[in-house]
Length: 225
Image (cartoon, rainbow, N blue to C red; front, side):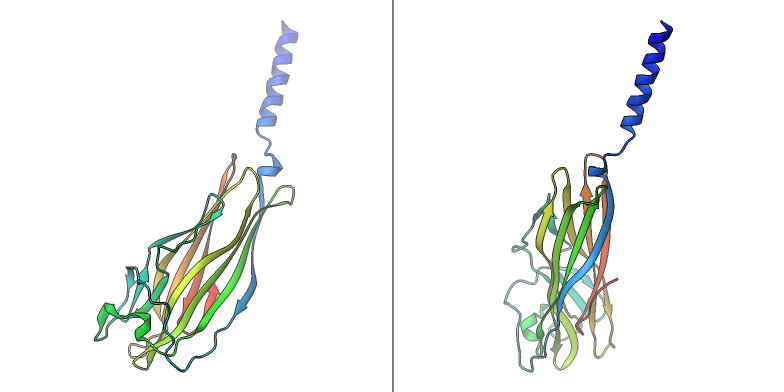
């Protein structure tokens, strides 16, 4: 009987030790974010309206500027890119003017050509293998002036370009607008917007969540914070 008890203890201890061992395949050991490419716009001295489309909902306001679009945009769902064709991109436009909130990008002049910055997020597991790769563009048109003043933003969005996810992993990502800023003066506003990219990786063992803050502005700034 004593031998059986000792055998049971050894087997139970071995089971506990095995249960507490993390499979390196499902262990998230490294997360990196890198800039792959970028492109600066060029000034257009004539009216260059953005595509004529709905501005979307009002999602934020300050004394001088107002943001239109959607509060939260899904970018990747269960490892597949989400193409938000039914939702308007973010536009940050003048507020306290004679036209009020009905101002559209086509009412502004001197838009600059679209600018983008391409990022790549990579997850590696305990074996050093790449298990999630997510490449995306942050792009916008910027510099639009209303009645010769200000610098505003239109068609700001995060566009998924490529997503690869290994077996046993689930990847999701979404974007939201979390703040507005005026980098200029009351008479000559420079619109600024803070975007948050939230992404998560989930396995049978755990879920890893991360946030990236990106600042964009009517002067052409696209900067990871």
